[in-house]
Length: 457
Image (cartoon, rainbow, N blue to C red; front, side):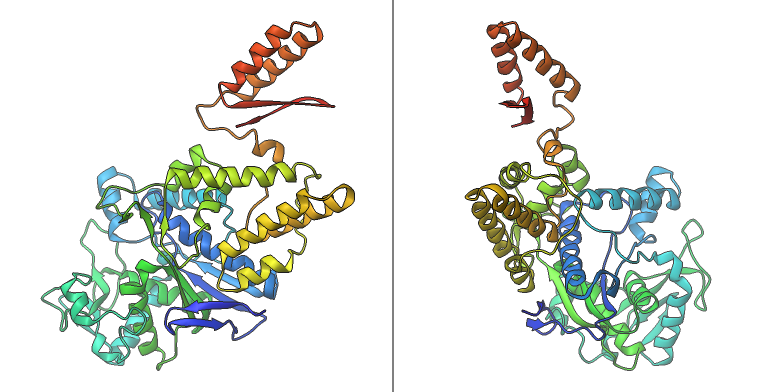
């Protein structure tokens, strides 16, 4: 079965056919590095990591080029520097590293390329000059603005009516604009703000300009897949399409457009204005990255995802059941071919609910087998999970995982030895007391032929 994906622009699922099977290209809008990434940002990173894994499986690891940018110049970054007294470089380097580390803990593979906006300002100036020459942009009050009237298909991706988007305050209404929907390509910088020299004075590029240029510079004029969160469809991706098409004589920016759904906190979309933002960095203090990843992929990527503590707890319990079975075979980092059932599910527009059902079925089948057949079935389960970014932890460490407030492993091991000594000396009352003491702290002791072992509840 060929890989099919839902193309936001076409409004339908389409069989994926790259322009060149030897160089499949994908670009996903990355973080603006001024603060910690919230769990909604993490959903996009995990979803497109899964797509990246599927593309590598289908076309080969060396034939997929995935670029995820770093926005390291932005008004939010400037504000953070002014408020903290830190330099912009200190802020962007700090939070770029935290983002990479946090996403890595969620099983997100490093992209092939990670272009930074500040490394492509000269190309951005060149793009803007080209748009001005083609009468698709104009200079006004120190700004350079794109004229949306120059692109007849403006709004096709998002389906947003221009009057509605203005009424909804989705665009900045400014007196220097010819049309309220026109957007900034270049803006002036004050003396205390970072800036670059340009034909229009010292300034800095607009956000939308950055991504179009980095795509062209790193991947080429037209790419196979452009992805991001649903909130980026308008205005960001809409504006990318317009400026790129006008600069490149109508050539499409991407062959396929993909967007993941919102993450919701109860009945509300997560947002800073509502004060219900959950940071991935904070969640990783209490939960293993695979638990968070499982939760993020539990709903189909295009659907809203209700984020609750119960979802995390349920995800942990499901993974525990898999890891108990995986503990029966020798741990290996080897990546073997996954079973067809999981591949087919994911080829259907990344149908993770169906893939999860397939994982449970593989677990149930393995649980009914014995001997070598059981070992082979468990290995097959592991291969299936690893395609999706799971089952990379050693089971022994998985069950010993702890949060910052949990009892220390050294203390547990010492109590386990004391319990063994008590049992050997037939002091069963003390042995039971230790078992109860550990159980009260969520530590389960399991006695076996090789002695006692422990895991966290």
